[in-house]
Amino acid sequence: MEKLETIGEHIRQYLEEKNTARDRALQHSRTMIRHCSIAIRAVHRDEREMAKKQLDNANDLLEILREGLASYPDLYHAGYIKGALKEYAEANIVYALVGGEPLPEPDELGVRYSAYLGGLGEAVGELRRRVLDILRCDHIDEAERLLTAMDDIYGLLVTIDFPDAITGNLRRITDMVRGVTERTRGDLTTSLQQRKLREVLERVEKKLNQANS
Image (cartoon, rainbow, N blue to C red; front, side, top):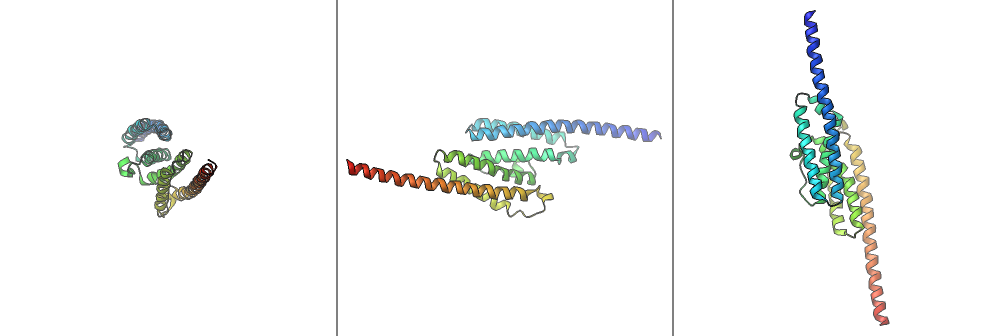
C-alpha cells in the first residue's frame, strides 16, 4: 500500500494549496466589496475621483482573484466570489448612470452575466437614493433621467425568464426593482405636484402684491 500513501500525500498537498487559495480569495473578496461600498458612497457625495479610485482598486483585486483561482474554477464560482462580482458590477453601474456615462457591459467589467444582472438590479436601489437626494434640491430633470434608467433596467430584467439556478435568484431582485421603481415614481410625481403648487402660489402672491402696490 505504499502507493496509497503517496496518493494520500499528493491529495493533502493539493488540498492545502487549495485551502490557502480559498482563504486568500475570501480576504480579497471582502476587501473588494469594501472598495465597492466606498465607491458608491463617494458617488452619492459627488466625489467621482474618489469613487473611480476605489473602483480601480476593486478591479485590481478582481484580477488577483482571477489569477489566484485559475487552478480552482469551483472556488471561483463560489457564493462569496459571486457576491463580490455583483457588488463590483453594481458599483460600476451606479458610477456610470449617475455620471451620465455609457453603461458598462459585463464582458468589459469581466463579471459573469448572472452577477451583472444582480448588480444591475441592486443598482436601482442606489438610483432611488440618488433621486431622493436630488429632489430635495429640486433637480427634477435629473431625477426624471434616473427614473427612466430605473424603468429601463426593470424592462430588461423582467424579460430574463430563466430558472433561478441559472440567473442567481434574479426573480427576487426583479420584484424588488419593480417596487423600488414604483415608489420612486410616486415620490417624483409628488415632487412635481408640489413644485407646480409653489409656482401657482408664487404667481398669486405676485399678483396680490401688484394689486396692493
